Every structure is written in structure tokens, then in C-alpha cells.
Amino acid sequence: MAKNGHLKSPFGKDIKVPRHIVFIPDGNRRWAREHNLPIEQGHEKGMEAVMNVAEAAQDWGVKYFTVWCFSTENWDRTRLEIKNLMRLFKRMIEKHLKEFIKRGVKVIHLGRKDRIPGYLKNTIDNAVETTKNNNNFVLNLALDYGGRDEIIRAIRRIVTLGKDPNKINEKEFKQYLDTNGTPEPDLIIRTSGEQRLSGIMAYQAVYAELYFEKSHCPDFTVEKLKTAILDYSSRQRRFGK
Image 1 (cartoon, rainbow, N blue to C red):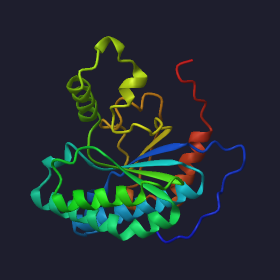
Image 2 (image 1 turned 45 degrees about the horizontal axis):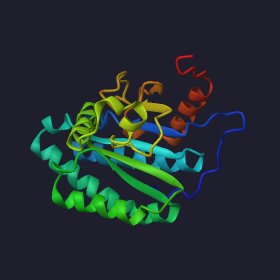
Image 3 (image 1 turned 90 degrees about the horizontal axis):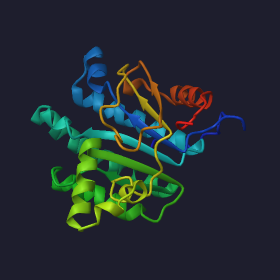
Image 4 (image 1 turned 180 degrees about the vertical axis):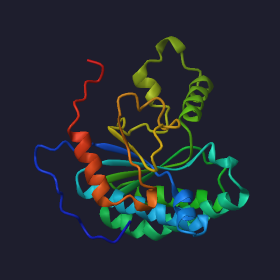
């Protein structure tokens, strides 16, 4: 993760810090074009911004942080961009692994593994295995992830196991999702001005608070995270009541 050291929380006792933040890092390509830079550099800057924000979130009391690295729809991009992204994910995980261990971060992968390159799968598996006993903070890497795909895969598991459909309730169904063991998101942040969820945690996000940031992901700072959390804290969550 970013080498900021531990950041002192800027929040008082009356501020409600979300337990679980989901971050949709949009706008890397637009940022690169606006700065006359290669697309790959936009993705790299965006990923570093996300790691920086995740570190601050941990320091401020957030316990779970999910970043949507690559969606099931992103396979429609060019082969070159996909190839560069997969290599970038590998480098980023390897670069920050020591910091994950130092800070007690548990890495969890959400999504499919059958379509990503073997070298990236091995890197993810190593990070997950190496950090599995950490309990200070959970970093979910949603890579080749889609909310609808996750639900379909969960249903397939249930069918394959021969479960009695009349005995499946919400609590049991959640056990077959990629997020089993992770609480439902409290706050979902999306950058670059896009005001949609695009399927992130389609089952789990029904009561999540949404925050849409106009700036592109590479320009999303710790201060912007602070603003998002303060906005979240000011809302009254009713959960349908």
C-alpha cells in the first residue's frame, strides 16, 4: 500500500465511519487522454490512488474495503489494454504485499479465476494465502467480477450440491457468494462522474449509500475520501423501516 505511514483520523466521535466501503475506480482512461499519456499510465496512477485511499480508510477505522479492479464486461476491451492491465495487477499486488503483511491486511479475491492469466492467478493465490491470518483490515480485490455473474455462480454451486430449494433462505444463500464472510457494503464510491453501479454487488448493495465523485480515479485523494465519509455520516440510514 502507499507509504504514507499511519494517518491520524480526522473524525470526531460523532462521525459514523462506514464499516465496508466499495470503490469503483472509474476514469483512468479519460484521465490519461486528458493528460496526453498512455492508457496504461492512467491505470497505474488510478491503482496507486486506490491503494493510497485504502490505506487511509484502514487508519480511519474502516474494516473492509473492496476495489473493483476488472469487471466481467471489461473483456470487451482491446487485447493490448487487457494484457497491460493483467500485468499491472500482478505488479501492484507484488509491490504492496509486504505492506499488507506489515499492516495486518487480509487480501481476498472476488470473482472468477478461470479466465485470468496463470501468472496473475498465482500472484493472487499467493497474496491470499500469505495474508489469510491477518485480521486488521480486509482488502477485497474484485477482479473478473460481476454482480450478476456472482449470483449465477452461487446458484450453480447450490444446484451442484443438491441443496433442497425449499430450505434456501437469504442467510444461507449469502454463504455461496464470493463475499461470504464480508458484511454488506455501507458506502459505495464511484469516480469520474458516472452515476450507476454497473452491477457491483448486485445482491449485497441494496441498502448501501451511494457517493458519486466528479474527478477521475487518479485524482481521487485522501481528502476526497474524507469528504465522502463525512457525507455518508450525515445521512440517516433507514434500511426500509
